[in-house]
Image 1 (tube, rainbow, N blue to C red):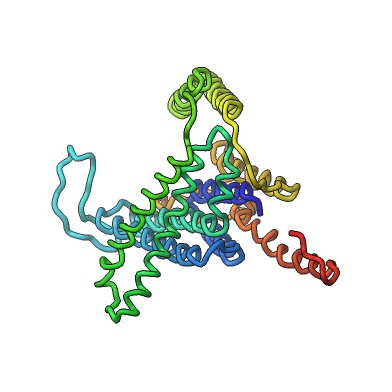
Image 2 (cartoon, one colour; image 1 turned 45 degrees about the vertical axis):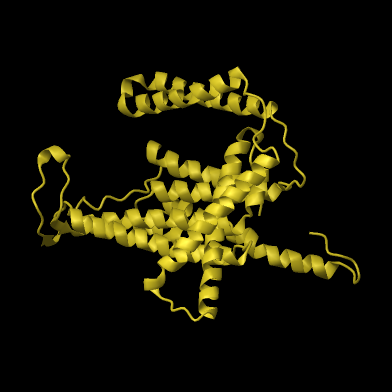
Amino acid sequence: MHTLAWVAWVVLVMAVALTASNPFYLGIVLLSVLLVAALAPRTSNAAVASFRMLLVGGLALVFLSLVVALVNGSGGGHVLFTIPGPRVPEWLGGLRVGGPVTGEGLVAAAIRGLAILCVVLAFGVFNGAVSPHRVLRTAPAALFHAGLVVTIGLTLLPATVDDIRRLREMRALRGAPGGVRHLPALVVPAVTGGLERSMRLAEAMEARGYAAGGPPARLPALLGALSAPLLLAGAWGWYYYPGSRPLAGLAALAGVAALTAWLALSARGRHTTRLQSEPLTFVDRLCVAAALLFALSAVGGQVTGWVDLRYNPFAGLLPPDFTLAGGLIALACAWPTLPLALAPSRAAAAAEATPVGEPVRP
């Protein structure tokens, strides 16, 4: 799969997981992400370990969300038990410690944790399936520096996991004990090695002239600076001042136009050399368009009321609704399984069609 196809899939998972609060739809999204993770390729052995670490971290976030709901208490009619706690003054903004713990509060906390788990696992699959070099090559010329920072950030977790694995092997060869109590003996050298590796990378990039160039032009910089306040003003006026929605829409369109002009003008002023290009096939274009269409349907459906992916547990803790349209939008997060499942069959067919003695061209 193309890098842009993977990016579109991550955007789709984020749009559905952060928009939906129905546990049925979130469960479909989670199962879809796990299915894609089982079929997705791995760029290195450290990618598998980093995905496991993200899985454990995501489950820990779900547990932490439940713990916070227990400590702070929650509203609702189905009170399970009450945790005693001190009385907090009103001027602290409604902060509570202890109080009644309801089923509505626990369900809402579990839904929030499940949404975060889906997003974390989606980034874990992307980090393991796509090489950071491919991400940097796909980044637009105007966003070269941002893509470079993201690329370096994507290599941090696999490199740290690889360092911890090597440190564990060296300690095991020396007969050192293991376990959770000796975890600081692994974390401190791994963090120190990561800082040293970052310093060497920064020195190498500076020696090779990365980020060297003249000052940016005034017009692209002005358009880029104007795009953010225009978009913020449009969103603020649309949601908080219904009478000024036409002006808010014009401000949002002006912000999008300024952002597009900034990207185009900045790309013209920067020339990048691509030693290896990744072709974007028709199937990849179709997959990207379909993923973005489903993401817009998930977000736009909440605004227009076309499809409702939300669930309010505080409305009596009723069973969640399930519609065919919402289920299809949630199931769309599993679309990478089709090209990933067909990829081995295509390679086998190409190998059978190639005569003996001739190399197989990818």
